[in-house]
Image (tube, rainbow, N blue to C red; front, side, top):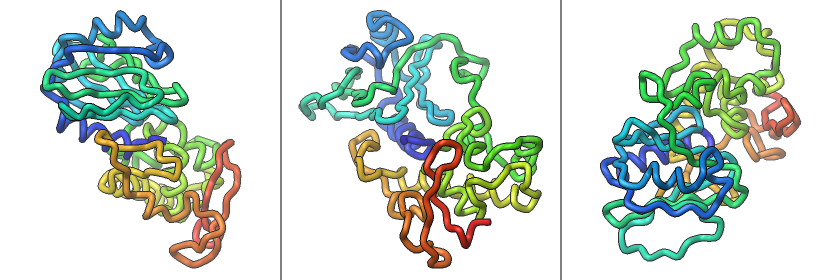
Length: 279
């Protein structure tokens, strides 16, 4: 967490409240948060710059700036990007590692208890404006699309578990543990199925499931689990957790057939699935 739907929710929120605003002041207190460049260099690169957009690829969010550079944000496990409106006067939360004050008096704050997340500014962009440090990422299912024929080609020749394939960011960017389980359930495929054993019909089901699950989760503004780590830009929770079919529901009845959901280890991660519905 957070995964593609949560980051897309943040992107849409950021587009609404921050695009067109100018950064007037930057404060960095977390060295690990800005680890690709000295904090002073990061602050200098942002101060005075106007935010010209809000874009995303997989789990990465970036904001093009008016000097042909970009601010890149990766939340990783516990990062939060929060917007505080002008005059909110909210005290800084513990583990706030960076604050960007905007020209309307609002603030963007990066909070990250585990400090795996990061912010950086780069001018190394490809012709589409995407930061080149993200070049190794695979296709984004919602930005680039993933039709059945492409899914079939991606699966061809790969000999791994379906869950490992879905988690591989060099194949499909943005799917993590939670949505991999939900996609497998929607596709009626076990997460430990071998990818080289899937036929064209199953690949088509998988393609549809990826698009449907991620789109529905975005519409519900992502999933906020019991740890409360994911919040949208304004500090609100997501709603898709109320629609999880299998993730986190071990021992509970499958919503499709009533059999108890099982939990096992696949690709080194926990996997939740229905032993009856998923073949």
